[in-house]
Image 1 (cartoon, rainbow, N blue to C red):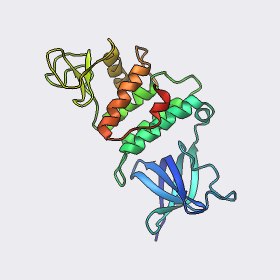
Image 2 (tube, rainbow, N blue to C red):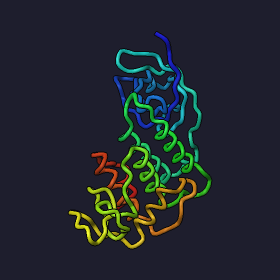
Image 3 (cartoon, one colour):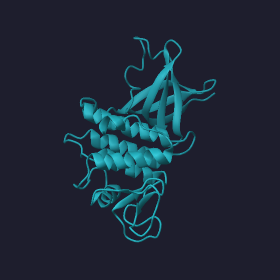
Image 4 (tube, rainbow, N blue to C red):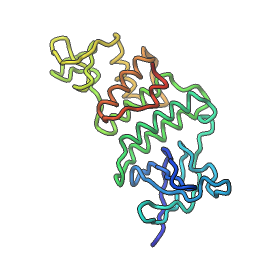
Length: 237
């Protein structure tokens, strides 16, 4: 059977048998793609470190019994600055875990791929990352998959709102609308989150973010994808 070429960003991998690994890749053409790298856990492996998480790679794949087998790997980008800083590694881990949670197999994901590539590229820049880059990434991710919260208008009546936020309803609620479980948020927070969602990841505004921004965004994402993200718990109390 013919081999196929694809590109992707390595999301994660896990052992298979004594020497192989399943490598999960986000492909712009085929979404989340599970592949097998044979003998990669041996010291003589020809793949070396090219299939490490976060790497942007080009792959040559051969059909296997259940998963495609990686026969050749070439590196496009490894993001070296990112890997030398623990905070950047933790931020990248949040990004790839969230993408892994929403990506679908055999479903084109160009927008998702582009978003993850932008996030990793920004983390790899010489200057320190924006303190709310992860929160901004999660908001952009919500928009890509159709889960974007309403951050300026009440989800119940459409009136301007900013002081209460309902995770289950999907955004802010005004004082007149009683939505069960709506919580008070710090003044200016939802407006700032809206500006993060509307800005490019490499040109984010400065505002009242911090733990509140990441905490609220994380809880919203986790609820609507029905999965707890383990990486953000390291970054946020």
